[in-house]
Length: 399
Length: 161
Image 1 (spheres, rainbow over the protein chains, first blue to last red):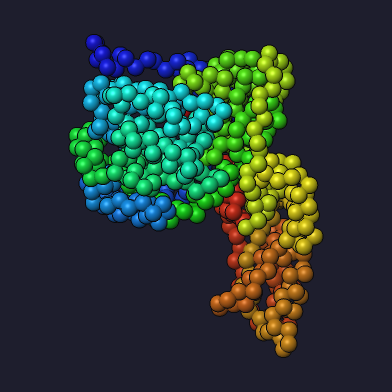
Image 2: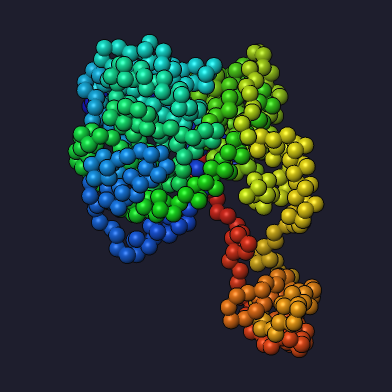
């Protein structure tokens, strides 16, 4: 069958072979998982079961159940002082993945350029390509924790640049932005008249400071499509539910696409999400404390081992430099898998700028983390690198 | 709650070195904090959580919850009679309750017979004990926050972005 030219432009994933290797192996300790190790809190699961028993099995409004949109609106107001009208400014989506797809399709015309951070989550660029746009990678640097700076935006900006994708706390680097850093970005964004698509799915997992949503910055709400969801903080990845917020024009445009493609999010997921917002805060806080402790442990162990790692401010990822091993990210990951049965993700899975780095997910139990890091240490001890130890980052955490 | 307690309540074998890393503290500081908790009696002791459901029947024993109605004593209230009861080694827990009875006494014994004779010979004849109702536990599902079955293997794929 003749495949469309747009889709052909998307290169096949370079690390599929490595992924298959991991999936085919037994007894691997995996630090390669991009989702919580917790199961969805019981009250949320129980609510979904009950709603099925009660016969909630129908379609819902395209935008999502109004009760859910009201809960989302209330949550954003209480938590972040964000004001979104549940009637017209909130759309319930099949995870942030669909929200992002809709956002791009709603704003990108053929030839438009979208600035996308690199390294970053894998879908940002390809979705722009599918829409006929061009994704322009902003290659971020390790020295400032792979963050986008105002000058990065200016340097990569061109006449056809229409939007920028932000994603913080970031997958894979775990980094986030302080309010001050965001203000710097907001200033350039306003100056260049850019639309911002802000993927803040990890926002509730921010450890060292209060998360600032991009639309909460002065003047940014109007130009931001804010994406969030339930997957990470509520451990609800398999429910596939998230939401997009923005001004009513863009939400109407996104709803138009959503109603023809997805119709609506499954009702049981919506019922579960209502319960999550109403009665899930305690579970979120508990899981967050646990992640924060694992973070402390993992970062310190990595630096002890000689895999220099900045202290990530959010999500559940560490992104250490493996340059000291003298191996490429893919070689390092493959050998570690074969020799020590520890799986992690080579940084290059997130773009070429991830070379020399690996993503370690600490969404796994302390016992397994301990064992995995001991194995990594053993591996490093017999892998004498050519390079000198990398820089040692500050380990203080402001406690 | 104190985060050290939260960690130790989940896994009492977490070393001070690991806790120091987890909490961004000095090892010495963790050690002295733990020592203080022990000294103050906040941490009473460390012990294994045993799932007796998995033991052979003769080793697993039986457990009963006993509602006890008592007559409080002048000046002493319930404390004195409670102590008379909880000092028996068969008693694993003892609580003063609100509601229709006074003390909830948890008793463990080798067999139904052992528990029954404890109630008949020791507990009921006590002065001040006005009556007892014994409930035997048939099956344990969850105890002190622990679900008593082996956790199932993770259903997550081993690698995802």
